[in-house]
Amino acid sequence: MKITKKDLEKKEIELTIEVSLEEIKPHLQKAAEKISTKSKIPGFRPGKAPYDLVKSNVGEMAIWQEAMDSIISDTFFKAVTREKLETVGQPDIKVEKLAPGNPIVYKATVALLPKVTLGEWQKVSVKKKEVKVEEEEINKTIDQLKETNVKEVAVDRKAKKADKLELDFEVLREKVIIEGGKNPKYPIVIGEGKMIPGFEDKLIGLKKGDKKEFELKFPDKYFQKNLAGKLATFKIEVINVYERELPTLDDSFAKTTGFDTLDKLKDQIKKNILQDKEGKEKQRVEGEAIQKMVDNSTIEDIPNTLIKNEVHKMIHELEHSITGQGMDMAGYLKSINKTHDDLHKDFEPQAMQRIQAALMLRQFAQEEKITTTDEDIDREIKKQEEMYKDNPQAMQNIQNPGYRQHLLNLLTNQKVIQFISEKIIT
Image (tube, rainbow, N blue to C red; front, side, top):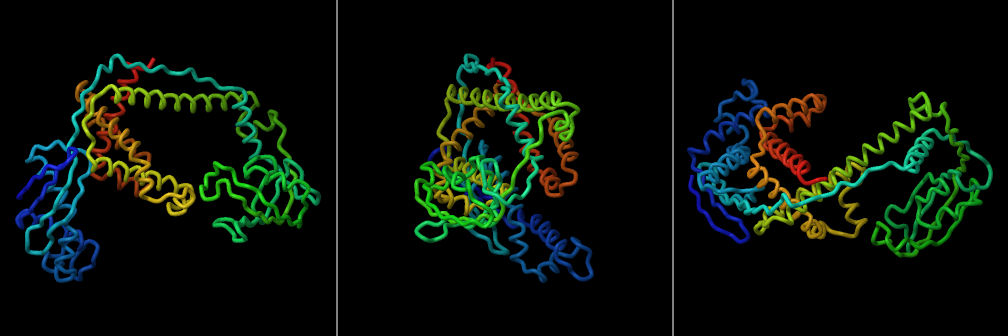
């Protein structure tokens, strides 16, 4: 393997790596075995077909392409080790030469670990706030529980506050229905305030079958930027009017939620709210402690590759969250009137904070000799395998060799944060 090294700006380095045919051969053999497990080759069990037969069936280039990830993963690690480089994050790989029968040449742009000098962290202090549960919070939760047990009866009368209406309605701008502006059989409870200001008031006095057209202005800080502050026309038709009867708040109601008495229900709600608040306060003080320690440290310039990788990770996390809510990324971007490039720019400052925190925690772990053992990792893997035993995708991720490194970083960071919390949070 030949390695050419080129220093770049901001603690980045470019490695040009040439992998010889001798080093490539074992990876090609494994790639051919992998292909033969997927492609049925007559006369041979999956994974047992000879290399030349696999090559004649799928073509030599297919084997080389299948082998590329393994080749790069193996040789990049060896190159970094040989050059004694302390790298961080994932490399940016660009294949320069891939032709069967010839050495493979690729370039890897990688970030070098920025130097971190911890400040006098022992002088840092963060105060924890007292967490309390107000009666109003308990009542709000009970109201939500009552809503799940509400009785609704269709009535032939004019709608009033607290009634539920089922509407067909359209939203138009300049006589054209806006995107997502056609809503059939849409349920609305008058007085809940879930629609834009003024909308629910327009429904009072309407009966089943009534139609109405009116104009309203969207709030200046509306979440869909393209509609914020704009005047729109609303066309509605009442499909049904329902009178709603909420359950009486007593022990009988408590029994429907699994508790013997109303007092026991309220006690459990209080415990749940307290637990949630304590969890959020713990996150807040830990975040503040880490940020103070970052501010108290000296950290070299962050490589662009590292920032780009972290931003990509953050966008992936956002996309996962959005799809989990039944939306798609394109629709979300349109609703906030932004592009992918806009998101990249918006996320860069937060990405920088996350990277600085990770670098500080890593340096702290080294200086304070906080480590995670193989036994720690094995214990966590066993726990997760038991938790996700019925989820094949999760099990596959857990059993991936790279997942051990992820757990090593995760568990070590948890230990560092615990150590910091005990020392500087009061």
